[in-house]
Length: 342
Picture 1: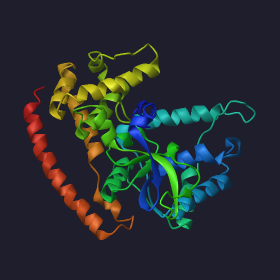
Picture 2: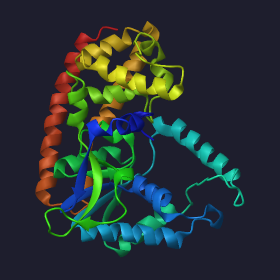
Picture 3: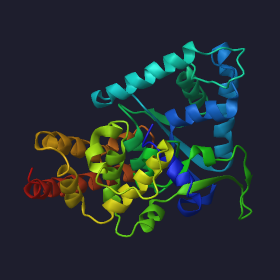
Picture 4: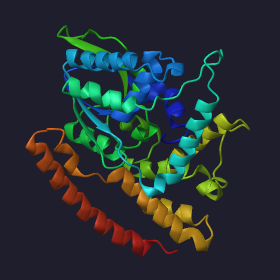
C-alpha cells in the first residue's frame, strides 16, 4: 500500500521526521482496515493453519480499544469500502499474491508465513459494535476521509500507510505504537507511547518544498493508482546521487531526488517540466492522470463526519471550507490550463 520505499525512507531518518509522543486526552482517527491488519500481524500471533484464530484476534482488538479508552482517547474508526475502477489492476495484483501465499502455506514449515483470514474485518467490526466504538465504512477507499477528519479535529491519525506522509495531517505509524500503557508524564491518567510525524519536518528538510507539491511527489514515485514506471523517462534526467545498483538504494535516492527537484518549482512549472520529458501523444493523458491523482489527495466529503456523531459545528465548518476550496480550485484550474501548452 502507499508509496513504495517512503516508509523506509522516513524510518531511516526517524531522528529528523518522527518525534516521541504520548497519546492521551484526544480524538484519534483510526484507519480501521490498516489497524485490523496491523493488530493481526504484530500482536495476535495467530496460527494461519487454523483459519484465523478469531477468538485470539477478537481479544487483541478488545484490549487495543480498552487501552485507548483508559488513556481518555476517543477512537473514530474509518474503514475502506469498495474500490474505484482506477485501482482495479492493483486489487487484482494483490489478490493474486494472497492466493499464491495461501497456496504455498504449510503448517509444518519453519518459514514464517502469514495471510489474513477471510473474516478479519467482520470480527473487527463486531468488537467495535460490542464496545460502542464510533465507526463508519466509507463508500470507497478511506484515506482521504481519514486525513480530512484528522485535520478538522486537529488530532492524530493512526495507520500504517505511507500515503499519510503526504496528506499533511498528524500521523502515528502503527508500528511505533507501544502495546502497553504508561502513567502520563504530567501525572494525570494514562498514555500510550508512540512516534508522531509532522509534515513540517519533511518540508523543512527541503528548502522551498511546499505541501501542495507532495501529491505530485507521490504520483512521480508511484502509488496505488500510478505504476512506478509511468514516469521513467522523467527520472532518466534526474541525477540520483549516491545511487548503487541495489534496488533498495536506488529507490531511496529516487525519493530524495524527487523532493529536491520539486523544491525548486511551483506546481504548474513542475508539471510542465514533467510533461516536457514525455512524447507529445501521451502528454494529455499524463496531465489527466496527474490531475485525477492530485484531486484524490485533496478532495474529501464532509458527509463522513455525520455518522461519526461529531458536533454539528465541525460538519458546518467543513462544508464551508469545502465550498471555499472548490472555488479556489476552479480558478486555479483555469489559470493552469492557460499556462500548460502541450
